[in-house]
Length: 197
Image (tube, rainbow, N blue to C red; front, side, top):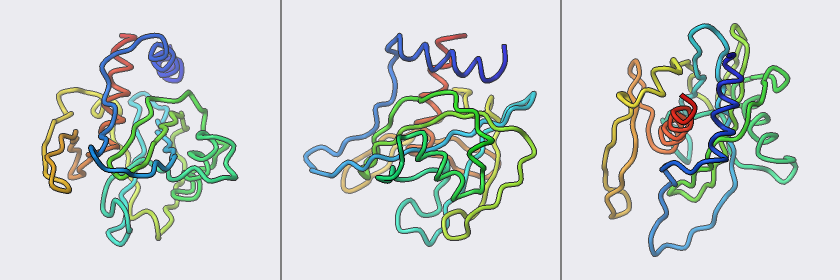
């Protein structure tokens, strides 16, 4: 079975079953507006598949210095979350939307900062030249898919944020700290894949 078929089957299985997934963190007692957003989960199609991730600049107003998938707000001119994820990936890292084979939508994740994020899973060919937008991306790197999806690397952490203790996932890979919403979306995807194993 191809990588695309495996991922497609896992996402379809997720629509038919209800495993325990990470729903996102809602701020209790706080009224926050919800902003629709989308990210692309770009999986590089090779014998050992990788996932393309970005490091946000320290100068960003939100989520500075964090590892993330390429993505952002869904704009009014975007047809849907898929269009937004492809547009953002092209703007942020120069990933041509025509090179992405969209596999499907993973579990929507709501962040504590008020974003409702739709992860769009796509397969991309190896060897693409990516050009990060300097104002939005400090670096682009690739992490092995099997490593990210391995529960042994998905550590549960706690920290205080806005006066409350929060629990979140963290994945360390070659000096990069993948945590928060990005790690949670990876964990959710790994659980979907477990359903088809």
